[in-house]
Length: 95
Image (cartoon, rainbow, N blue to C red; front, side, top):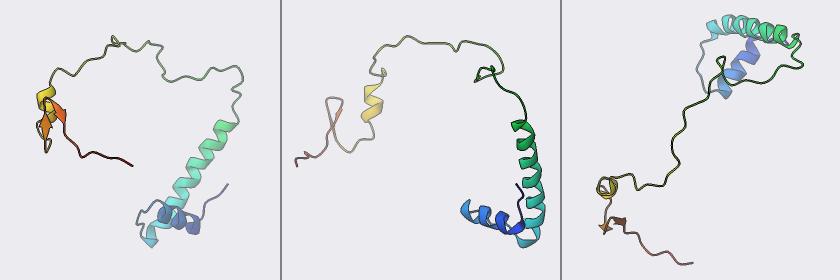
């Protein structure tokens, strides 16, 4: 796949990035280099290779799954327009 300056201009427009006309040819070359690397990667035999999320095998730390109120209910409702007893007061909605 090859990218020309028209395609780069279209990509820039879709990404809402302003790219000066004089930079389009340079960006087209850079994108073609990136696509070349991707094509090289597709030539690799990855049969039997397990997907991984990290290059280092590790188990992420886990925390106790307990329900709490956060320990600071007065801080939570401090900026509310109206609160009663630590709860937000909102208009009643009935459909």
